[in-house]
Amino acid sequence: MADGGKSKYVRTVHAAAVAFSRDGQTIFAAGKDRSRAFLKSIDVATGAIHDLADYGPELTISASACPSTPA
Image (spheres, rainbow, N blue to C red):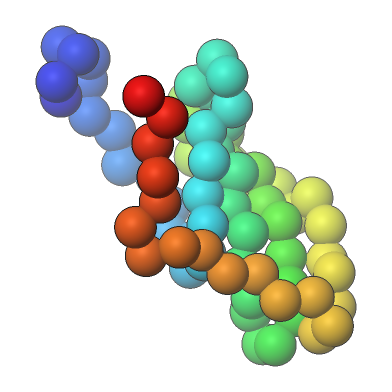
């Protein structure tokens, strides 16, 4: 890793978008599974996945192929 930290593998969640919490301890994943939009959290330390929300089939979640990074 560029910062000298250790690499860690967590369980796979097929998501359209992911984001880390400010403290880096949680990954949030949003996507669709069986045509239902979801929001999940993944505990980086344990790999535990928690269902946070099921938005049903009406919500569309998309992510940019090239997200911009603030300068």
